Length: 207
Image 1 (cartoon, rainbow, N blue to C red):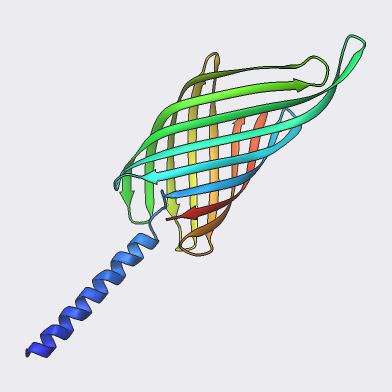
Image 2 (cartoon, rainbow, N blue to C red; image 1 turned 45 degrees about the vertical axis):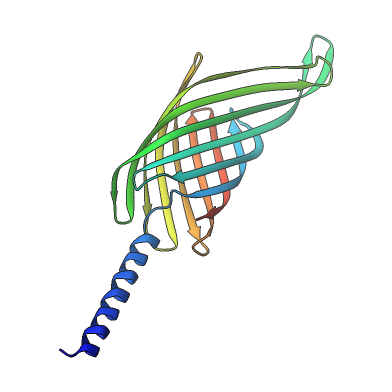
């Protein structure tokens, strides 16, 4: 094998290795993004609307940080004695977690995360003023995220949270379509309990 043949072979091998690495990276589930969602919440038969925001950041192949915030509100009318009043009820949640991918092979990662949980409920009225409360606690989440193709990704998880005297589980499932490597559109659904569920329409920026 002469010098030029060796050089050509080396270039082809390097190019092939880079292409394989790029393909593996593009089909790995994404844990680096910021997203904004329109939120529709069904609470005991009443519909509330709002928004949600998420931030995911990897710090190694297996360790990541995740922050999720959502808020939804609804207007209603009520009577207190003979006094009719209008009010707005608003509920907000925040989760801040450190996560670990205990399985991370190819296009699929299974993960566990845990950290802070915070819940706030506020009622604003035009007659009796505003009142509400907020409490902090903890949450634990287990999930799986898979890049089915270069363009489609799904995520399913269950989260347990415990805040003051309130503890419950959330079942979450979502899907993303990657318009390109940096932008995706998605839809998600969360079942909190038999009386509360959330639907999300999401846009996300990935890096």
